[in-house]
Length: 261
Ligand SMILES: NC(=O)c1ccc[n+]([C@@H]2O[C@H](COP(=O)([O-])OP(=O)(O)OC[C@H]3O[C@@H](n4cnc5c(N)ncnc54)[C@H](OP(=O)(O)O)[C@@H]3O)[C@@H](O)[C@H]2O)c1
Image (cartoon, rainbow, N blue to C red):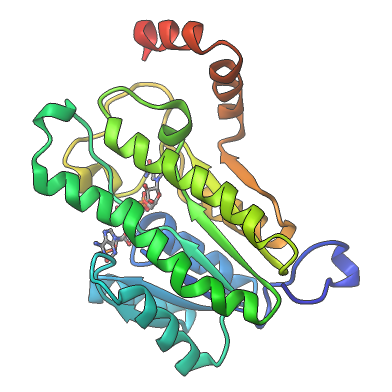
């Protein structure tokens, strides 16, 4: 994306770029929108909450596109409105998402559909809508905000974990598919983050450890994926420890998580 600034060798410059952030009305998306704007990017933010989204976009002189990611055609509309308003699209941060915790068999059928629609179908639709535009210009980035749940696979968050694992797999393979086109695909893998996510999923965060972190470091992770063309950023970084343990000793990891998780 763009020409490297000699002052920052190898880094992509965000200044003057147009970036879509889904779910920019609050939480990680809002923090990411603000961080991108601070770097000089123009942000097109999406969400359903007109007041919250409007407040964030007003602050950063961004463009708000209201809508539900579950609506067929929403992703195409976001891309179309971005090109209409700004004439270009350089990067997309696929962030809008919902969680769910509890026994899978007790999960209502409509909640299953909603989670799969928001956390899997909508990101896939956004990739389909945006990638042709990103590759056409020969430069660009697509970042998926996944979750540590999709890598460690968290009990009682089975469908959410599976959905985020699916997005990790999808991103890795998309990266291979678009290699050489100038488009970089990466993921940001947050641990627990202090947002309305837990209220919105209908169950508070109850673990005493790890303590949720603020959304800003996750936003910094998104910028790192775009600016430094990094494949995966884990926030906070120490979560790479449990990730490695699970990969090297899956049964031992599961036994520990049963005991202490
Ligand atoms: N918080 C955590 O601990 C945590 C940890 C790991 C990963 N994540 C991931 O981080 C991402 C952002 O989560 P967050 O913590 O910032 O949660 P949040 O504060 O609840 O924000 C979620 C965002 O997604 C949007 N959204 C949700 N459903 C939507 C729909 N049907 N249509 C359009 N927009 C929708 C919301 O917009 P409106 O309300 O305006 O509709 C909101 O802007 C998610 O993908 C989540 O899975 C979060």
